[in-house]
Image 1 (cartoon, rainbow, N blue to C red):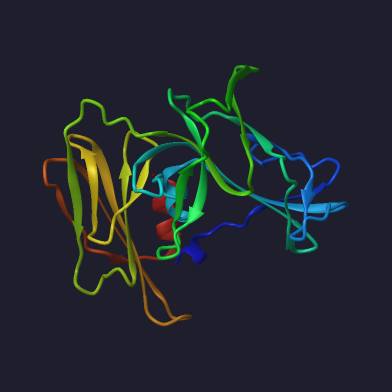
Image 2 (image 1 turned 180 degrees about the vertical axis):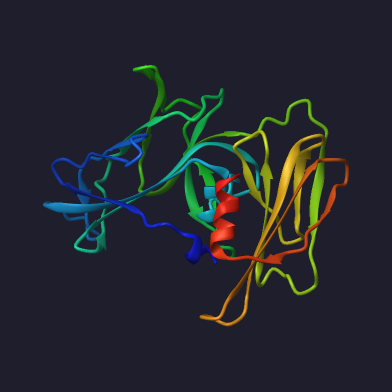
Length: 270
């Protein structure tokens, strides 16, 4: 299902002497230093930069990048990025001690924002986020340029990274929100998400089909995506329900057969 939803990566040819490139949207500029191959040897000549920016809640579902840390804590995303650099089809890495930096239009600015590195969860294939180890905002520079608020921050690795802030639950009474599904929609064929209406935040529900520590009164949408059938003859399903969270919230979802275009239209509207 996610392969069917995925859009092609942006690609830019760069050189080892000038590894800078700009996203097609113009929202993000990436400045790269020198690179080495897997043997630690310097890489020269033409390189290929593959790139993706994820700004919306629908895209966090599409690309399996919910705004959660590796230990399950909720984040509010201020922008997620994927960058890979290859030479003749083979991945390269940043030279030792080097880092590249990103200059991006800020979807939002928030106290306590921080840089996180993405890691793939082997069991779920979802991206989860790990603090980069710097104190909050210590390696993020905020600039006002041409009427735009832009963030500049640094990364010591390629792959996925994000600028995010811990979800502010101060003063909130929280509860567990759970989804129920028909018996033939299981963890083997279905994935569940909780989408905040008024925050740029998406959580994947746990193996018990629940999300913990959701503020009572928060407006959220529960989303179920499912695929059934044999490879090459798949049937896709979508369910969603919006609620104002109450204590011990239970949400019944009944997936309906849906086309990829229908699922895409729903994700685009989140």
